[in-house]
Each structure stands twice: as structure tokens, then as C-alpha cells.
Image (cartoon, rainbow, N blue to C red):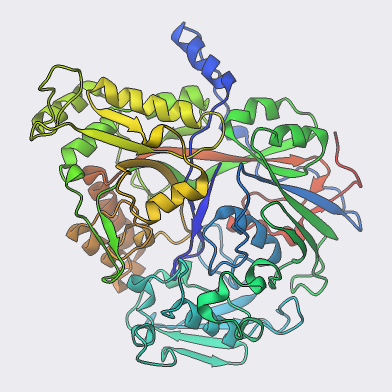
Length: 593
């Protein structure tokens, strides 16, 4: 699985996953058997545990090997303020806490992390206090000035990373003036030692679930120009965090050696060291079987193989993620800082609706993934109370798809079996998909075949799948060759979706804009939205709008699984969205085989 990550200013880390469904030969055989009348055995996902059952005491001097499952090297941008890729995110969860604030089971900030906070009665002042024993791994204290520095970097015109979101960030007093170069400081941020106070122009419920609380080591980084910070050695080769493990050695793109941070604020980690190494999805399960890895993701296509192993425990949960098919509807105007919906090809929503009705995601989830994927009804995942259960997924209905296309004027005028556009011209769509595990290409061709069955000429872009980084570049640069694309988002703990869907959102890759969308997104972060039912009602209406307009087709929700060697103790797959690596240990010197 391939994952790209993004971060919003008023949202905890969200991971975007440009994710291709993947399948092995076994799953293809299963689909064939189904056609012959045999049932495909479904996975009983209700039986997935989320914690290791090994209750033994962690041994001293323990070492763990972690598999970063990917068929491409990691980029090595080892800082949350600059990284866009989940492989990098997996790395810095060892060297950093997710944020200064922890979250509870509902993804709301609590006071159990590296800092505590208080929100004023009018919801416009947020005060954060960093604990006295929270230090950077070079021994320097983490201070309010470090968090302020993060904002000064992110809001600088020289910053080219993914975080700055004007719709959210400019709710902080003085932020707009600083961002435009009219001020040297952000007037709404005040620092006093380990204390930092944020003052907002208006109340926003997202401060409780997603205020940016990831600091940058000011003393260490301030001699690096902001424009060069992302590419600097201090980010890529010698990063310093405040988490349980320190980077000892990096083999760029391939592996990272960590050693325990003995001065970690929560206490000495139970492991002395960790080796993280990139492992191809095709060999990850075999590596778990041989004991070469202690922990590694298990993809859906490798589940049957992993289930047969006797030396690992499989942990699973519904992921905060959805896969989707996006329509390329315009471009991002850098000068205006907003998305412009100017591609005439997808202006008629009946075309988009027809393409949603033409594909059978239920069959994909059941047969290709044996129930480890299931049709998505929304772009808000079912983990959240904000998911609108009244909305049903687009159900496979090729006849309805054909009627919608007929009504919209897409008809086969030359009797070649493929529809022309309403002007009678050739209508061809390029479908961009990304390389991944074995099912990437079969699934892409499956969707193409279903669209062709309703008369749409859809072709794989350039006749091939695209490597992760080059695929992502196509989207970022609004490449005109891309008409539709297959990707996925792993969403943030903050339910506010404006970081993907806002008019100014750089990550709004469909480039879809809509006045009703603007209105509902604004209501979702208004002072009234501190009333939870108001916010639920607002996001219910927003999801109805997305379902009707179909700027993207939500295809599948998914279970995510990890294989953990039986010698591992203390691994909690839920952990409020955090791995809590300081609490993980091993009870034996060598992995069980």
C-alpha cells in the first residue's frame, strides 16, 4: 500500500493515501470460483484483536525490527511540518510524539500528553503548557517558542510545505498580516517560557481536535533558511525529535537505525533499539514468517498467507481511510491561492453519477478483498459519529448509468459501441492509477471494463500504472493528461474536511468548488458548531451535497492489519491514533519463527 500524508493547521496529522487496491493470484482465482457458483470465504473481521496478547515483562536490551511495507524508497523528509508521505510519517512516529497533546478515543485533545491545555469560556483563547521534563533529544527544553517558531515557518512565504491552510490558520489573530509580509510576528500568539497562548478572531470547534501543536526545534533549525529547510541535512539526515527514539543512522530511502532516548519524558523506552527497513509488499509476510521482521503491515491480498503463520498475531481495525475515484475538474491557481473549476469535461454531474453507478464496489470488496474492504457511503469514515448513515453507497446499476448518460447527451452516434460527447465528438477518458501490490493493474482494468460496458471509452493513462511519486506529481501539477484517477485519503482526527475540500485547499486534487460547499464547511467550524448536534447536522448536509454532486466517487472503506511477532509486548493498534512506541517491548532475544 502506498500512502501520502498531509497536515492541516487546524487538524491533527491526516494521511492521504494514493492507494491502489491490490490483489494476488489467489484472489483472482477466488473471483473465478465465485462465478462458477462457489462462495468466497469472508474474513470474520469482528474477531480482529487490537492489542498484543503477550503479557510478559519486556526484557532489558531488547531490539525490534519494523517493516515499512512499500515498493518504493521513503523520501526521508523526517519532520511533520514538511513531510507529505506516510512512509516518512511511520519513521518519525519513533522519534517524535504525534503532537504535544494526546487525544482520547474520540480524537479530542486531552491533558495526558507532553502538554496540557485550557480553552477560554468564549472559545477564542487556547493556552498550552508544555511539561517541565519535555526536552528535545539534544537535551534542550521544548518551549512555547518552539511551537511559535513552527507557525512562523509554516506561515512564511518561503515555506513550500503542505501545512498552511488559510481557511483555518487565518483565524489566528495577526496570521494573515504575517503571511502577507505586513508583520514580523503573529500578534495572536504569545509565548512565556513553556507556555504559549493562541487568540482567535472567531470561535472554532476544531481547536479541540486539530490545532497544530507540533513544534520545531528553533535553536537547532533557525540558522537554516526556511526555503531550504525541507532539503536540509537537519531534516533529512540528522533530525532531532522529542520522542522515545533517536535517529542513530539513516540509509537514505532504505533503513533507519534508532536508539532509545533515555531522557524521554514518559520514561525510558522498553526497547534499547529499533531497526526500520523498507520491505516490498510481495515479501513482507515471508519476512514475518522467517522472523526477519517483528512488526509489518499486512495487505489484504496477503491476509490468507499471513493467517497461516504460527509465529505472529494479526491485529486489525477499521482504518480512518477511504479509497476513491477522483475527477480532474480544474486546476490550482497559485497566484489566487485557490482552486479553479474550469475543465468542461466533467461539468455535468450526470456523467459523474453515471460513472459511480457503473462500477460494482460491493463485488470488489467481497470477492477481491474477502470482506476486508466494503463499499464507502461517504467521504467521512464510519469511525466518526459524523458519518451520515442515511446515505447509501452508489449501488451497481449499469442500466441507470446508461440512462443518465443518454439524458446528458452522451450517445453512440457512429455505432462503434462507444459514446461520443453531447457535441458528437470523440469522448475519451484517461484513468491514472498507481503501481502497488499485485491487484493494482487488475483492479484498474476491472473499473475500465465496467465503464466500457456502459459505453464510455476509458483508457489507462500512458497504458501503464505510475510509480508513487510520479503519480503524485501528476495530481499536484494538474497534468492535463489526467481525466480521472484512483487514490485514497486517510483522514485526520479533526472531522473538519476543508483541508481536502476547501476552495483554497491545495490538496483538493479534484479542484471542485461549490458555493454550498463553502457555506457548509464554514458552518462546520463556526461557533455554533461547538454544539455537537449542530455540527453533526451540518456535516450530514455536507455529505448529502457530496453524494449528489459526486466530485469524487468514494469506493471502499477498509480494514488495516498489522502482523506482530509473538515475542512483542505492549503493542496497541488503537492507542488513540498513536503507536506509543515507548511502551512496546520484546520478551525474548530472538523473534519466534
